[in-house]
Length: 346
Picture 1 (cartoon, rainbow, N blue to C red):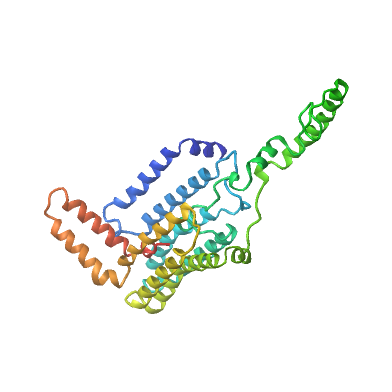
Picture 2 (tube, one colour):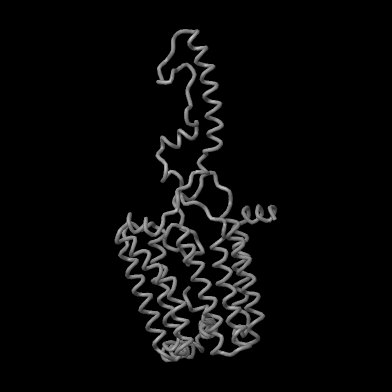
């Protein structure tokens, strides 16, 4: 296993290329969404799991400086979220095959509830920081230098209590030869003790205690409350949507409007949070782009989007070099729309 980890870390580019190629081939297969569904989705889920494992191996590569000031957790939250996301599609098509379109939403609700639990646990464990890419990427601090002043890092490099030979405890030079000899012996003993202390209290062992919810609210005030509220809405939105679809059906506008309202309200709250880090600002932009997926959800898709896609494909069908790829893209979009997990945005 260690040999495989080493190989993956040394050939990251090659691994990513092969994973992208393999998953791409599963999408362009003829009649991707019209033949037996369980087999292709099982292959896709397996490839997704392999990708998640490789990403976890790369992310956990040894570093000379600890990447996060928050106490590390042994539970692989990102890997668990990857696995739930990839296998959710397999669960959906299997439930549809054996139980039908209506009852499949019971199983989808269970998968969404599982993702909510894992993401909220990660949100809490990571110090109530914004979830990047749905929790698949850890939102960690820049490095240890953001926690410790430069003089403290230098102290750790020498060890607390380090004393230079030829100087007394106050840093003053000693001129007498006999005093220099005694000082050298004393320095040897002090530095030996500091070396032992340095091994115990090295920077990799320095972690900051995870902040609690009350700490976040007390220290950040309104900004902290907005962040917690906004993230809670974003995390729970897919589950709320599925529960309402389960009750009212896909043809009802109630789940569609409710999901859109929660999504917009949650991002509106997060946009008012001050002092966001660069990855968190990029995450908000990514979430705004995901609003386009509302065009792919029923009943909006059935009434408007599908007609527009089919009309575009029909008009471009006779255009050389453009008609065929356009028709294939439209076919994939219409087929993907039949899978909730592809348009969930979660």
